[in-house]
Length: 184
Image 1 (cartoon, helix red, strand yellow):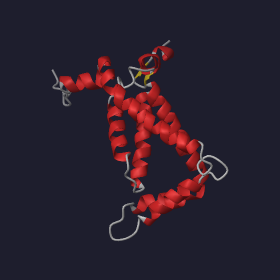
Image 2 (image 1 turned 30 degrees about the horizontal axis):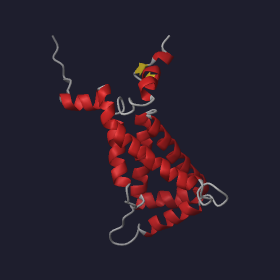
Image 3 (image 1 turned 135 degrees about the vertical axis):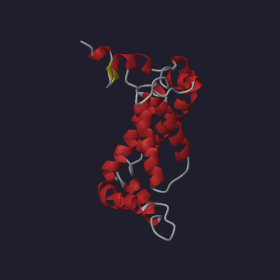
Image 4 (image 1 turned 120 degrees about the horizontal axis):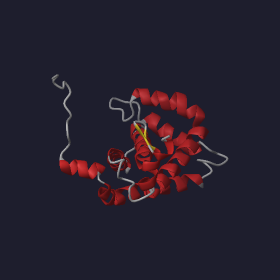
């Protein structure tokens, strides 16, 4: 009998429960709702602002980027050179499009987290935005939001169980196990 070269590594029972048992959905409810509310509030502040999504779309983002570019210099820069170049060469020339992408992205992440709909995916995109903001040299609530979003990504199977994921995940499935909607 051949010996298994790559033995399976099992997580401790409390971790398995927290990340995979539907009853753990109650544990994730408050952090998920808090994070969703943060994203929704951020989006609503931008969607009504002409400097984000209106006639002057991109003006607010240009100011944010200029501040980030100022923090990219000096002996101890807060913004790394490669990210400053990305902001300067890619985002700044297309600030209006990026501003709308940020505003509507925040809205979609907020709604999805509040509804418990595709929670892992929504949390991933939220953490991606938080990470981008932190790379641009901002702190504020971004590290806390990033940490909670990362935990929600890890708990994707149950973090939205007290929400629409209870029905969506079995229906849609995963790439490695199609759900009811994709079975023949």
